[in-house]
Amino acid sequence: MEELIIKGAKRLQGEVTVNGAKNAAVAIIPAAILSDDICIIENLPYIDDVISLCNTLNDMGVKCEFIDKHTLKVDSRNIKNFCATYESVKKIRASYYLLGALLGRYKKAEVAFPGGCDFGIRPIDQHIKGFSALGADVVVEHGMIKASAKKLVGTSIYLDVVSVGATINIMLAAVLAEGTTVIENAAKEPHIVDTANFLNSMGANIKGAGTDVIRIVGVKKLSGTNYMIIPDQIEAGTYMMAGAITRGDVTVKNLIPKHMESLSAKLSEMGVKVEEGDDFIRVIASDPLKGVNVKTLPYPGFPTDLQPQMSALLSTAEGTSIITESVWENRFQYIDELKRLGADIKVEGRVAIIKGLRKLTGAQVSATDLRAGAGLVLAALAAEGKTTITNLKYIDRGYEFIEKKLSALGADVKRVKK
Ligand code: EPZ
Image: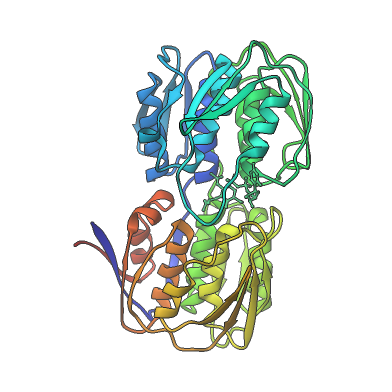
């Protein structure tokens, strides 16, 4: 068991480089098995979710081999089985992408119900609706989702909710289907565009990714490719807010400024100076910062995955702020932990009312999920005295060497074994 010890109230200063996007990586790695040949994926983040996914694929006979820490070779030519068991997928939510990829390529898939972060009901009815519309039989039994089809045929699918996972999964199942598939009310997140670009680099014919209508013309086969994934929007946002919460001067490098617009706008509204370059953003903050209201929304709205980090930041800003969580039904579980650090927050359903300007003080806290963990790290950086954060397994799912990156910015952060 490891924990992070953070001695806070230090102004962060300097440059930090963002890794590749977790949520693109966990879609693109399974997508690679749609190819008949070897795929090389570059700029992968070296995080637990990526490693777990590779282990799952290795168990299925897909050879996943790291050429270096950030470059993966995926060779599915000798795949042995089409089944991902509970043991193998319990840690990763994104294991559901194996369904779309296996179904698309081999017309059969068996994947245990996904694990991952728990912040309320996480249905996959829209994924199943998509597979069924393409002609698959999908049954759920003994904790496994089993999908099979004689053949998949393109069709028009309207998503009842804007779902990142369902949009990507239907794309994966449809690229090798007969005819044209149209996904309406599709999600528009950067990792959807990235997954479509990856598939197109293998010879797929996908148009409209990044808009709410995606059109996929099925092709007969997909070739190997060499592809570099995009920078992580959420990791970038977390470090931008680390700069703001410590009233620091932090330049976050290797990001796509366009992906950060909703956050940059909110930070500016709070009084943070945000300077954009081609592939970096510099955040300069000083007291006082103003409270603001934030509502999470699908892209290009404010990301739910930056909501806990924003709660931490707003706890240090002047006045009352309101955060409305509109994507997940129960993503405020971490608030009790934030309160241990002195935050003054009241939760009513999907709304958190934050009274700012309270001094945060170090305490012992536990990460309740990945981004909650990131929010606690930020609060600890601002808090006076020592904070101990446990349950790092969540943080390690999505942040590569977080303590090293923060230390390089001048934070006092240590990872210790309990
Ligand atoms: C993805 O999860 C991300 N995970 C999540 O990031 C992120 O919070 C979420 O999108 C929203 O942006 C990955 O990309 C691996 P959804 P996903 O399907 O695909 C409802 C992180 O911290 N819904 O877009 O599972 C659902 O209940 C993680 O990196 C249905 O009703 O999310 C939710 O309210 C955590 N039926 C909303 O849609 C469905 O079939 C959005 O979910 C699917 C979803």
